[in-house]
Length: 328
Image (tube, rainbow, N blue to C red):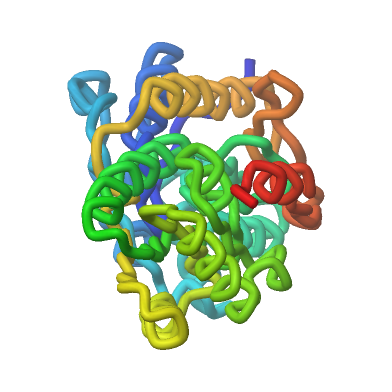
């Protein structure tokens, strides 16, 4: 058993469904093992303001099914500077925090890694991947992704109904930042005619899309669904161009932040809970500066510096599958 007596926990960056389940996992597993937990509010902003609440098992009751984060979240410009990280280190030391568990994406983890390295080993950080974008290379799962793709899928199913009724082309833009995972999963699961992602720009050539829309229309197709990734954007401009060039009524729908909200799916609740407990387990084993990851069907941990140095490679079989399933 390690000598960890007090840990801090915070959520940073964009919120992700399942964050609350992970926070609950951290708190209950820590308290059950005699470890004090301080919940810092509003991410690194709250840490720099030393804004925290003491957390116990009751403080995380009835949150496993709630979206968002009870600790709130924010992005901090001050923490992005070296002086901001030094300030955070001093605050953690003053509060007697032995380790900090951070929930967020790659930006959150890079800040945590820099702080750990800057502290000369005095600050121990454990990262729990919570981002709907699925863009962290060292893990096959990130908290919130499953809920986001199910939300997007349900939205597209509804849009198809009205698109068919009006015999129109619909462009649906989904989130994901510079990664196309949400778009790929949403497109394949809804039977979309086109999937445009940053990892395959050639397939998203607007002139080729216009040609395929015309051909589909001549064959009697009553709707044409295009899933467009946030990293590509310009959905409204695409819609205007398609309508102008084909004469087919075309509408753009940007699903936006509704993909972040809502009650997390069963998978996000369970996996987040396990990752939260795993973070505490890693600390109790005496490990330092780790990322909790899901690989090859197992929950494990990797060195934070090594984990963040990995490069995410988009699986080409997703692109191939999407092209094979497209109606010719």
